[in-house]
Length: 111
Length: 115
Image 1 (cartoon, chains in turn blue, purple):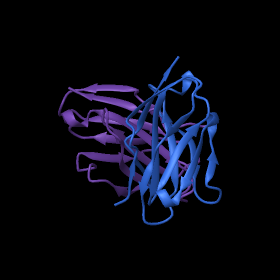
Image 2: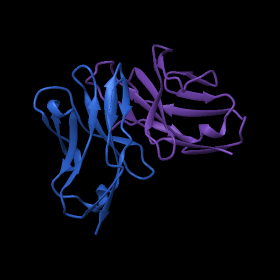
Image 3: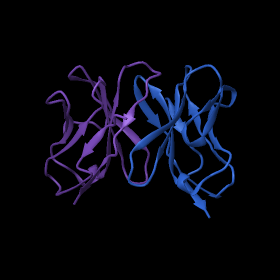
């Protein structure tokens, strides 16, 4: 069955440090992958998406993600984290129009 | 920028009561979704809706649930007789087309608390 796994439930980084959030997927065909962010009390905001082409995709707020088919991964990265990046991050794959989400990773940013 | 809106932001109800959660999708979107997120768990698909009928529903979406587009703007989720386990954040989403490359836009959610 199609699934998305985010191995890290909670990550803490210092402000200014780099960030990588992991996402692995299980999907038979070419996956269409998304990263969403949920700030406290807010809805889900799309950070970036991958459909085809260049495997490194750029998103909003300085985020990028790299699709690696050989590793079934779509990890999210940011070179320098800001305190406002503290939120919950969800990786998702689309299946017949609906989104299948991972468990989410909560990012805490230390000053 | 157009956005999906949801009301109320928080709903508290007694077990066994009916609740209606309301959503106003983006105006030129044609595909509508409800998802839910139980506290501490992943966001789960409930139902998709297109052309005034359900396209797909999950096993969570049993006979207690129904969806409706009563007019040209609102999209509602009704839970007929709420249970404690229905307590969750409910998200509405909309999409312009069914293309796999098209983005779903989410509303801010309604937090439902069943006592």
